[in-house]
Amino acid sequence: MSRKLLLENAHIEGIRTYEVYRKHGGYRSVEKALKTMTPDELVEEVKKSGLRGRGGAGFPTGMKWSFLAKPEGVPRYLCCNADESEPGTFKDRYLMEFIPHLLIEGMIVSSFALGCNTSYIYIRGEYRWVVRILEKAIAEAYANGWLGQNILGTGYSLDLYVTPGAGAYICGEETALIESLEGKRGNPRMKPPFPAVKGLWQSPTVVNNVESIAAVVPIVNDGGEEYAKIGVGRSTGTKLISACGNINKPGVYEIEMGISVEEFIYSDQYCGGIPKGKRLKACVPGGSSVPILPADLLLKTANGDQRLMTYESLADGGFVSGSMLGSGGFIVYDEDQCIVRNTWTFARFYHHESCGQCSPCREGTGWLEKVLNRLEHGQGRMHDIDLLVDVAKKIEGNTICPLGDAAAWPVAAAVRHFRDEFEWHVREPQKSLTHSFGIKGELVPSTTAGIETAVAHH
Amino acid sequence: MTPTSNEFRFSEAALAEIADLRTRFPEGKHKSALLRTLHLAQEENGGWLSVPAMDRVAEVLDLKPIEVYEVATFYTMYNLKPVGKYLLEVCRTGPCYACGSHRIVAHLEEKLGIHDGETTPDGMFTLKTVECLGACGYAPMMQVGEFFHEFLDEAKIDQFIADCRAGKIDVGTWRQSRFAQ
Image (cartoon, rainbow over all chains, first blue to last red; front, top):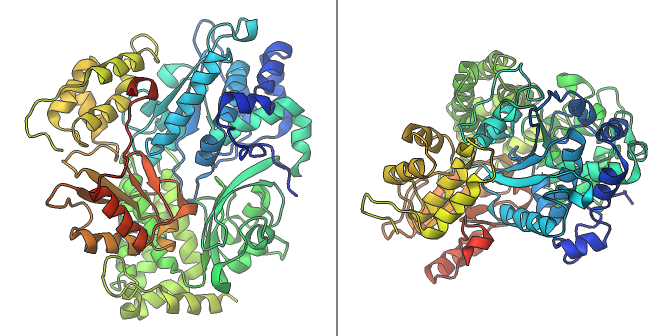
């Protein structure tokens, strides 16, 4: 049985309330940190844990913390990134909804470590009921002396607020999040300066994902070294994976880093396999931005090694034959799913969500959507397939923020691994029309396309 | 539900809440309260942001109207045109699509006799397809007001529409609980 560090207590009745959370050991890390540790010791502990950013990029959290500038007389800010919007990802919502005090506890300890006296949780506006859950928990934390002035008599003071967004994927990018928190359009900023030097209101700022901040609690309680004992290599600790698509048991799972992808998909402890005995066709293992992998490359690397649920193993083979752990948004496709259609919905997503600042992204995502729409709806031409690759290449690396890359990668990977299916859409336009969106009466899944490609990849 | 007049006024409760929101940010940084204030304005303006509503937001937050317009036009949750009493926001992104969200949209279109983006003539329902709402494991899904409705199928949609017509569906509020009473 896999160890759980974050969701162990998430299903205890009443755990959303302060009393029950506290009774099960809640807020111990705040007592330990504020009373027995210095901020520098806390940063060291997080470094020792090997914790890597859980939002998608996987940058070491302790190192990010150590970059925070500390000029005299200037306030510093911690912003929790709860703008979870990467298609396939719904783990942070789960954590906040079921065990909100864990995030608040992590925010207090992390804010103390960074020397922040005001911190914000920036949450996507669509999670409206979660805003309510968090604000209730924050009020309880204030009432019980864990927030406010002179916490536990230590002289440390912290105010914590929830600030909802209003519908924009781009605000999950840290500088766009900061802009949005300042009450502006979510346009990412040029870096440098990095937020660690000039962030919220031009003050030094750290932006961390919900899961990263929650993970600080067990790291402080048990020590960074204990945390680092779980996992494989540089992928330490546990990871929340939100599993969805064509699986028997969709949901959020906390895994020990290092279990195999095959176990995760087929074990009854996790996804429980593919419904109706269908075959696994493909998977996007880390949120819509990461490359899609066909079944054979998903379960084994190009060298024939078993693929593991770690940052390194999922990335093995680079973008030629690998993918990324990303945000942990694990999307599974069965043999009946149409890759062209799926890629089109992703391209439409990125076009919709591009902030419009950089021409390659603003125009490029539009072209990707347009060309994929054409292919999906039976009007594609054979050279459209290479056109997609060409447009994707011209976006990648040419934008202020990573949204451009995030839009380009899934398209490039879909063509790389499923070119035959794209060609099939050009050769058999009438057949690809039968599963088209919005055409009434003929809404059948793309069975033929699915099986042809599944066969080609087995 | 859609006000016909050009007037917009916040309720006293909303004004109290906006005053509280301003205290959450440092002196002079009250623009940070804008996004949430716009949510409150939209709620009190029948679900959409008219120009008078946005102008009132600018007034209560001591901002220039253009600062409010540029934000209101950026974020997808702000409706710049009138919407029905129930705004049905159906997710259309990959994972939901893989679980049949297109069938949910088609069913709603047929049942309500409207297309994506349109409102029923009685002003009850607006259908809007939206991008990923973070409920991929519970697909297909839609958001109506504050709440998510998940694992949808045709029968559940039929029941939901009937419940809306019977006034049984709670759409929630942006008000904080301590001001809601």
